[in-house]
Image (cartoon, rainbow, N blue to C red):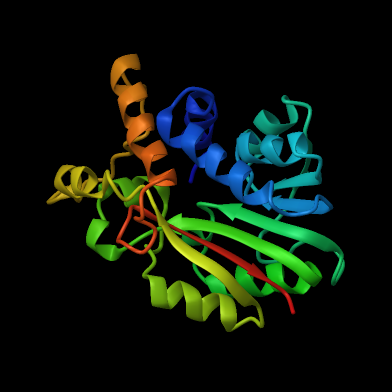
Length: 232
């Protein structure tokens, strides 16, 4: 993702339904774990990093892009510039490594998964969200610099292949998958979908995603996949 797209994402982050519900998902998941030392790999504008901070974690955001690092730092967050495939942290030094919509941007995702495993302490946790299913591949993925979208089995193999044990792997943004698929069908030109949304529509879309908290949809195909794992 280039600096222009990152700056646009940072500007949308506070109110856009997708970012807001992703933060809510991070908050619900991480709140169940004892706070410790965390790293948000590919933190972008720092919205999810701030969620961990507010939950009591001692959290650092790692961001490769100058624009993203500047946006996160402007929120008072601890940010370092760095490469997800060469994390500037010692072995077994962290209690949580989080990456939300980052692994798909890295050509060799085995490297970033292996680095996450390396820096986790025994018992340390991994929380990763990625886009789901090549059936949804479109110009949106091209615009954001994606190398792939993930299938459930492939993501599980990637995580277990670096020595981590999966605690849960679930779908997110399930109810809106038919809408997304219809919108993206046949669109191969590079064009990001991240844009301002009418406030009424924005509230409706956020409500649709929020409903998934109480409906049994986690095993159905969604727009994203989320995996929680730990280092034995």
